[in-house]
Length: 173
Image (tube, rainbow, N blue to C red):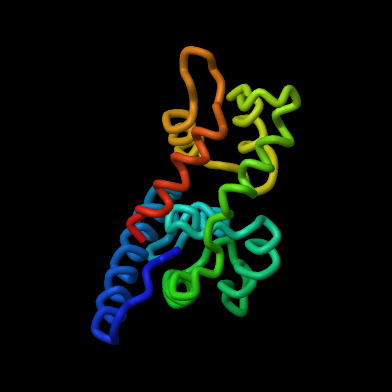
């Protein structure tokens, strides 16, 4: 959960920091995807939100977020002028904060048919790239370097979830 500002001055500073950070991230993602100035492709919205430590479901992105961010005339792009105020509100409310550790562990246990606390990386990579909102290559590489036991090509998911929860507590946003 994001820290709540103690006073109005802190709230203003936090808002300005978030605005700066959102703009820089939006600019970077837009350049990477070769989008027109101050826009990103629709499919990049979930990536940006995950980077900002907000994790909407696929249904929320498709049914709620994208329609809210689209102009009157839909296109393949989302404008910064629409995204920034939306994202500032989301961050202030922690609307799509990460799932608790128990939920993540339960999801991993569904995939762990042997009940031994480990899942083959290739299985997870396939699911992350083909189910729901697909991870970008950079996200897969990040996941691999963060979660994979390279010698065994396995993810020990209890260790991964503990590490993830610790990082979420210290996330920059």
